[in-house]
Length: 188
Image (tube, rainbow, N blue to C red; front, top):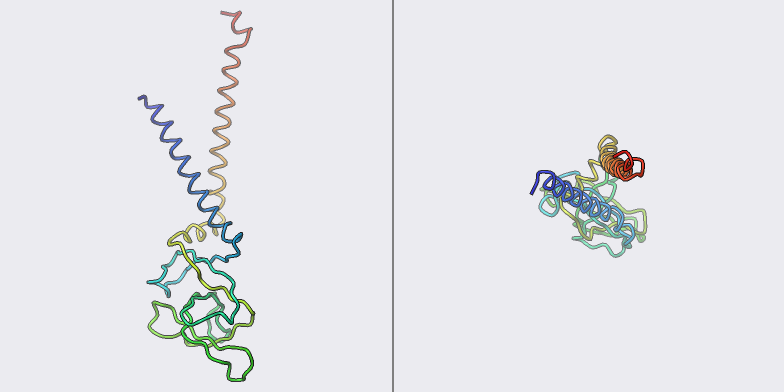
């Protein structure tokens, strides 16, 4: 087998692997939305042991009345907590609101945390995202693609490769048609 044939096989294998990876990533980006699921990337370590940093979690919107202790939800802690980003933690208790009514007071805890979160909260909406599954480590791809430079490389390099392959094929086709033209045949 010649070096050129080996190079072509390796190149085709690499292109196939890249295409399969891109298809899987695209499916993880679009299919959950089609199924009515939300997706979040876990960026902290408070749920270690259940899912690690970089996991991609999938959540379904469920009525707040269906939430139970043990469910894992993603929510924005109360403003006075000092936490300004979404948190994905496990519900440890649900109590009736002291002022009565339908509102419930929630307490949560990260599975890797020693204690319960120091805040309580109510949920303003009638539905809440609840974790239904996750894929380990795939979230790092989403984190990387959030960087505009990496996103440009992820789009630009395959586009450049396709353009170069097209240009190569165009040059080969043009050269072959020149070699077969009647003027070239008469000159021989």
